[in-house]
Amino acid sequence: MIEQLTIENFACFKHVDVPLKPLTVLIGPNNTGKSCFLRAIQCLLTAGSHNIDQTERWGLSVDSVVRILGRQDNQTSLILDTRRHDGRGVEVRNVCEVARFMLPSGGIPAQSEGVADSAIRPPAIATDGANIPTILDYFLRRDRQRRDKLVETMKRHVEGLVDLDIGTPTASSRRIEFKLENNLVLPTNQLSVGVQYLLFFVALAQHPHAPRFILIEEPENGLHPKRLKDVVGLLRSLTKGEFGAPPSQVILTTHSPYLLDCINLDEDEVLVFSRNDDGSRTAQPVNRERLKHFTKEFLLGEIWYNESEEGLIRPPS
Image (cartoon, rainbow, N blue to C red; front, side, top):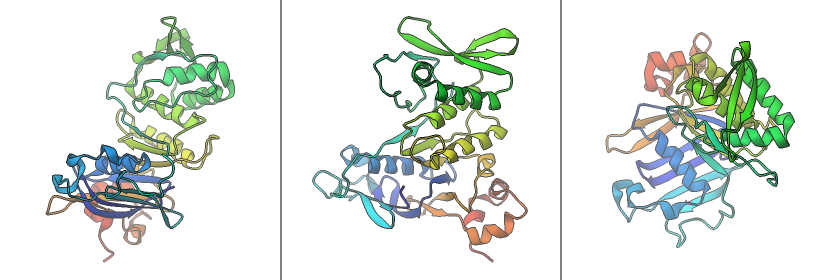
């Protein structure tokens, strides 16, 4: 897990140094650097500085030295530094498994290819959820226990759901079919976008090889506000390894006060993003000392909505 992240001269950031926790939420107005922050983490974890071109350097200058440092166990163990000939620090020995998920606004793709019987593990979840049918097809044939847990979780959250089945519209393709009460059977693309997104998060949670680092853009999109508690619960369980895979670190962006209501400041981190006068962006953690007086009576999202971002970081009076 990355406990402290430092970003220098990357895109819209001149200098940022912030703590991270197993579950970290990024908030702030549009165009304040939240997505860029996820991109910086992605570059660090994939040792991907060879992809950092002039457009991703502060001031659009080829002379800007980009440094991204990730501290683990109070030690700097992940380094991306464009001064090195290969763009990364010698301490980066392995490319970390990281996935940045951006779900399509119209829902996840309804069909994907099947998986061969010789496969020894399910494929990784595509960053747009495109291969969820493939993964469920693998579970159905090779891991029925995990498949049954996935179905039971979906049944708890989708009223009227009886079972999930795998259809074969062509010899090589698979699609998920929802068996509903009154003998109604519907393919995924005929269900609401919110149900499709919920299926994605449940499949991510149940995947036996979930990424060590999970980056998600606005998971609230398309979901009923009351379902956000379920989604945050699934993501928090991933950070604790409760589904059998090693613990993941989850970092997500949101514009939803309802999602922030589900955050626990005793164990989660919230970073507030803003724009500086020189055009650079910055981030800082919420002021827990000030907020503890408000959270006795109000939910965190309520405080955010009523006091704006400034109210979350303002020093105690």
